[in-house]
Image (cartoon, rainbow, N blue to C red):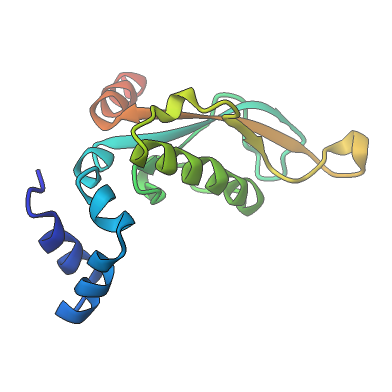
Length: 150
């Protein structure tokens, strides 16, 4: 577990001493830095709850995985991911991180659903998926994935 947070940030981001001083001079950064270790222990799961006519073939129940800081965990995800759905997931991930840094459980987010911006066949588009967000402990997600593979 990370205990030297400023050293970790400096090394991870490749900052010089001068850049690190600028980073630390922003009052929001030192305030949030102590939460980074906990954020690294989280996984963001975005699950398809509706799908019809999706040209990328995303189906109900399919899940997309991101680490707490919002990086796509490529080995855990489908080989194909629709860029239009992915671009809409960013909003949920950003909101979750802001809630987490504020000390609020991201799972209590009021609006935790999104969808690709294709309007669907009835409105002149091709298809549509709707997804929901969940913020989970990384260990829990690993156990769940191991169970699914059995």
